Amino acid sequence: MGSHCVSELDRVAWIGRSTIQDAACLTLVRDSDLGRVAASFGAVTSYGRSLDIDEFCEEAFAYQEKHPMIALRTVGEWTLVVEDSGGQGVRPEVLRRVARPEAVSCYWDEDVRTRFVHAVDGVIQTSFEAVLPEYREGAEPDGLEEHREHLPWSDGAPVQLMLALAGRITGEVPSEEWLTGELCTYPVAPWPDDLVSQPLGDLDGYPAEMLTALRAAGERDQRRVLRSLARYVATTADCLDLPVVQHILAGNRPPCAEVDQTLRELVWSGIWERPLSSAATGCTPCRSSGRSCTRTPATHCPACSPA
Image (cartoon, rainbow, N blue to C red; front, side, top):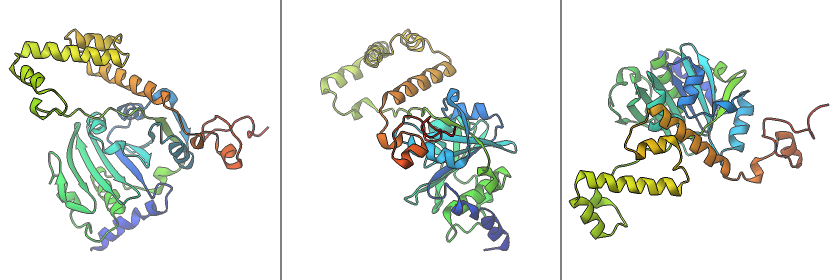
């Protein structure tokens, strides 16, 4: 291993002493507009707050049962997105929206699972586990080989290797300063998982006679059946009256931005209908002293606020 590579890894060794050393996802997006990047991640921007990294990690832990959280700051021409024990930054559903024009994500967790992803124009170009870089996926699985060259993938620390590679691609060397001071933080209403299309013959649980009839039907009749099924689902989900749903059921195609906004609103309303465990509520001082309150962890309630 050359001295140049050693110095690259030494420069990112700070991650092993940081608040997020055990599990995190760091995403660099080539876009300095924090609001636009946050929205692409599915952030609920009306709930934005400024927190330091410790406060952010406390809040992310407290609300992990309800929703993910992200913290952002500008790094040169890029925006850094931090997730504590999260993984939104390596999801195709997120990268399709946020990698406009480019994004690089480094993910690791407490089970030593890792994932490095490079996406351009919404398409994952290269994706691999840091411990098995020889097994690569994506539209251009060999697209980063020049950048990966001479890094000690067989015996280096996986997280440091990913950060060093991210630095080579972006030109921004990951530094401790990335996690200092105030960050813009938001809760996230996660984008729904992509639907996986299946041939009619692979659908489990459907009566054979129904599948036979659907296969024999023409395209017009199949569309009529699908529209009826969509109406039933929308009625059951109590969203039949939404304008975007009405447009789709009428056979029109609403703008993607309108569909995305509706999805985010539905996901966010569903999140807040789920109960939060009692262990995750209450401000930090109250939880530490055994008192009960309903404030968020990074804020203080009247019982513990200084006079």
